[in-house]
Image 1 (cartoon, rainbow, N blue to C red):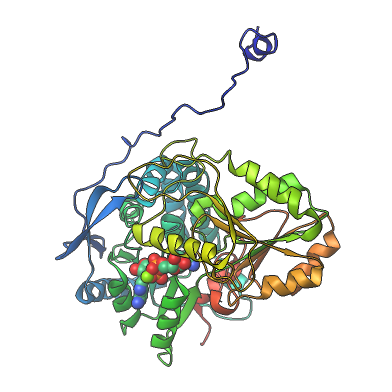
Image 2: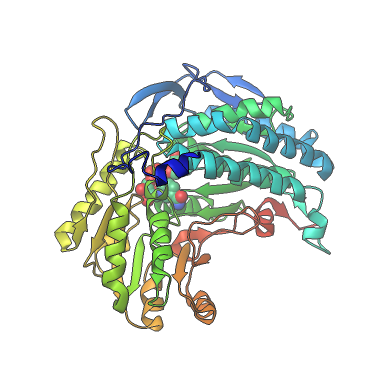
Length: 492
Ligand code: NAI
Ligand code: MG
């Protein structure tokens, strides 16, 4: 008799309590060094000054990381320039593709190791690093490997050439995935790279250097310099960097743009967001609830395109909010390395404080807060999934990017009002529309001022699909054919 038959015949009572037994992923697979330098010209450059990187789940110290100086950046840019001039830029595209394919395959082979390290250093649930970050990072390398020898077909009647040395600065919310978004198109187009990971999450970028060694990528084609904003600023300001690609806060993005004005350096900026997730009264409500949850609680809400403003058509406001609150009680908050965890640790103390400040402002301004009962671990950085109702458009929680597991619910009556409210933000990175009517999806998509509009889904990514912002969410596109353009010039 099968297990299912026995259960149905009452041999096993149906459990009354659906608590989960712990299912921790072993971290044995990962070896972390005590101390790391910078990866320059294919070998390790000793760091004069270091800082400690920790695990946000319990503040456990993990390693000493180099705080890159302007001199380190200069050495890395020189290595990248040399690699560019001495072969890489002149390699046939099919040869460059070989390295990218190798990197993609090695990432797949070592995906468990990378997923564990990503969750340990960044706090995101292993379920997400394993099923989203790692497969997508590998997919980006596979995808751009495919373009490397087809650039002339991508831009017919033009002559695409590499730009030179790319300086790339990435954030902490998708450390390895953002590295892949930056490095894969740059290399496919024949550029060389100096990349600076975020200060709180350097470990997967440092492990990636071992992948480069395995793939036998020529020295200097990819260089990794760690450190905080000062290291990033030195990279932006370096005179021999031809192109800057930045993902992070709007504030730093603006400073970089000011800094580069008039220098002739190419620039792409992928900045903040305050996306509207819009639910019409004809939407499939249970599906919409899943999309709302995925839109804002995925990766603890540390997502630039998170659906942080829920716009609900008035007639379904009550049933939808009821369903949403009920669904929130089933989210499991806890150890990022537990395979059952839905919501992991907040990335850093600084980010936790920012979330706490904005949530306090929401209460102060008069919004109504709901948090499901959940026990948060004592050590580390944690914040319970949160919903605010009774939110006015003028409240800070409806205006500012919180970058945490906090949703603000607003209502609308007509599609016109939904569009107006959705677009009432300085940002424009993404939006979601939930409705049964195809014609309404198209009508909305034409009017929403956002780089990506998801219909009856949210937070879907694919390397073939361009991603980027309007307004203060930045400019330039990453992914797809469009993602090649920032790494090419067409002037001769
Ligand atoms: P940030 O913009 O300061 O950091 C992002 C990256 O830029 C890091 O690698 C950092 O070291 C580097 N950086 C900082 N200052 C720099 C400078 N002057 N020149 C060059 N590079 C510099 O973001 P932060 O402080 O970590 O987070 C603040 C807020 O920004 C978050 O609460 C969130 O709202 C937003 N943010 C948005 C992200 C996105 O994906 N769009 C990612 C990270 C943060
Ligand atoms: Mg900052």
